Length: 160
Image (cartoon, rainbow, N blue to C red; front, side, top):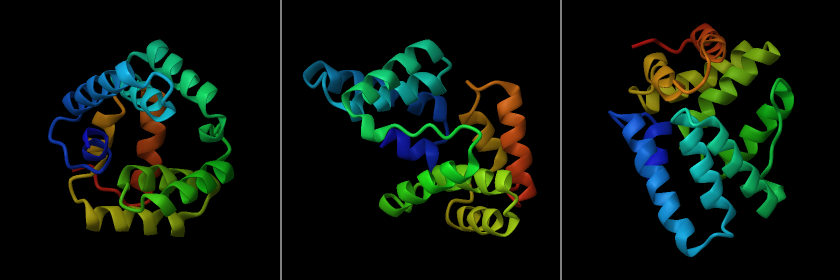
């Protein structure tokens, strides 16, 4: 629930929610060490909290347990968009993924599709603004955050 709260703009304090999500994943791993989704959840929490090496280690463990969950599409916007399409077919309410897909559309030069996604998110989750997304991405470097923001703002996402 904490992940959903963060990625959908429902959490007032996303960093605290990521901490709780990591704690919940660790508790689950105590009883189910071979559960790929728990390793993935912990990896995401650690990464968003700025613990990149720990997070990546958890994500690699998740991939080792379930290679079908791996998507490596960095810089390949067509592959990234296709991955987000599949993800959103299962979880259409995951607005954070919809915004990342919008950024991928912008990387492909598809402004119309990017604006459609941003408009949908702005209507469905008004708290999920550029400022909120930037807070979610604090563990990422400024280059990543600036690139993401420039794409999302060009697609119409308001800062506040």
